Image (cartoon, rainbow, N blue to C red; front, side):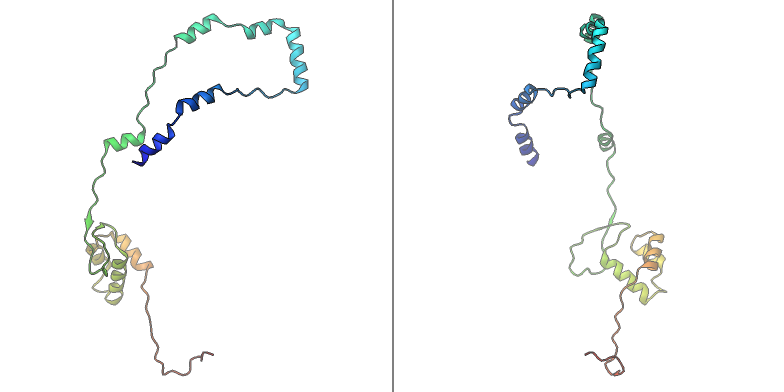
Length: 174
C-alpha cells in the first residue's frame, strides 16, 4: 500500500514538470579568456575554410547516423537471476532446552544457542566437568565441536562469594 501511495505522489504532474525542465534555458558556455579570444580570432581570419568546415553538415555521416537502429533489452540483474533460480532451503530448528523463565522462544536454529542455554551449559561444565564435556555439549545442543571448545575456553560464568561478617580485620567503611 505504501509503495502505491509513493508512486502516485511521485507521478503527479510528471509531464508538466518534464516539459518545464526541457524548456528551460540551456547553460551558456563559460567565458573565454581574452588571450584565447584573440588567438581564436587570428586563427579564423588566417584560415577562413575552417569556419566553413565547422558549420557544414556531412550528408554521408547524417545518412549513416539515420541508419543506426538500437534495440536494447535490460538483462536480468544477477540478484534477480539468483532469486529466480534458487530458493533458499528451510533452516533446521530445534526446541530450546530446559525452562526459559517464560521467554517466548519457540525454536532455535541448529548451530546456535540462546543466552539462557549458554549460561546453563557453562554452569553445568563448571560444576561437573567430567560429565559435561565439550563433546557431550556439542551433541546435546547441536553445535560444532570447535565452537564449544572456544566457548568453554574463553567464557566463564560469574561466581559470587559471600564472606562471613565475623572477620573484623577488614577495612572499616567511614
